[in-house]
Length: 246
Length: 226
Ligand SMILES: Nc1ncnc2c1ncn2[C@@H]1O[C@H](COP(=O)(O)OP(=O)(O)O)[C@@H](O)[C@H]1O
Ligand SMILES: [Mg+2]
Image (cartoon, rainbow over all chains, first blue to last red):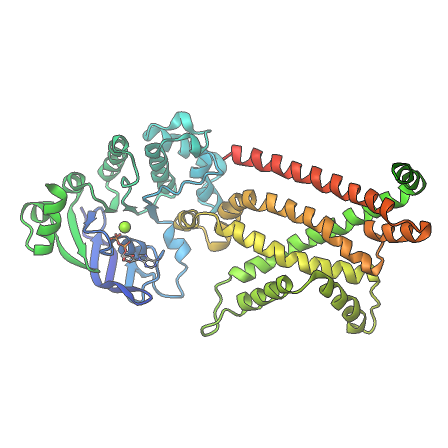
């Protein structure tokens, strides 16, 4: 792991109307780091993640990505988003495109690749996640686990520098969780910087370099997986882990 | 009676068909222009551009739509029939032009709501996924949202066309030559009211009924492709 700061968040605040969801988050994520975000529902995990690529506009605070303050109004966020892949709980694959087109649309449209190059890359990526034979199918013919694997490689096709996952397995039938986690595990091994909101505690413990426990709009506790899972300090962390682990 | 109907038909079938031609033409122009104008109205209605606390584009279009929906079409026809010739001094629009413009604007209001509903029915996650890949909002709209929205919009637009076929009969108030105008002409010439009316009714019904069935079939095929 190098020490280069890839993402830096300073005093992040987000409100939805009167609801103060993020109450001052300051944190940085270094290149190659794998960070899991855990915590009770409604604690602001998704909002935090969605602020990182400005899917939600923060009310206060700054976000630096690769050294650039992307909350600056003069910055073209679309350029930076190309470097930040995101995977959603509900997959959000494009139902009107084939599996292959789902992957090639953005790189071709945004001029990163020719159609031919993109097609080759799509085949390679699909092969990696065991979906090559589905390349000409439409997503309605895929299972939930297959859709999520497609969503992951669709994001990878933009060759991002960081991958953001928001509960990627929460909408899946239990028997499909494993196949998706396996793909993420492989990805993490390649050194991809990853931020993952998850309720899969075993997985978080296994793959993370650091774990954030978010509650009440702040990172209430953070540390290595050993520290958070083995010896939590914050009573809220203890209570939460007590509920989800036993 | 049946005999009379047959007689009226054999004598005047070409007038009835001419009327039908105008009716279809008028409806088609109306809906096509309504689509183009309505599309931009829908985009304006959904625009997030704000001045202070109001969204001016959205508010103006919203008001226009409410006015069109809240007043009778016949009134709107009268309005443009009287207003347009006075509006521009060097332009003398024909009756047909005035009426067509009124119908187009009326249709544009309804179509804009159809398009807006169709676009908003596409899951927000689709836009978010597209934006996360780096597409700007226009690219996300064109490449991801609209192709999916078309499925919701197209059947409703065809139904709007069917509705317009019937609504254009109001234009006969101004004798623009569509089917109901022909009815007035023929019934005046023959001093017969019921028989030509039945013929006109049958023509309207056959056309709208068969078109509606086509729309249903189309809808079924589209949802099968989901
Ligand atoms: N778009 C939104 N509009 C209004 N409230 C929202 C919105 N998104 C999230 N919230 C609220 O913000 C709080 C935090 O939500 P979220 O970040 O999704 O938490 P988590 O992912 O930890 O469950 C919740 O109370 C949620 O209802
Ligand atoms: Mg969440």
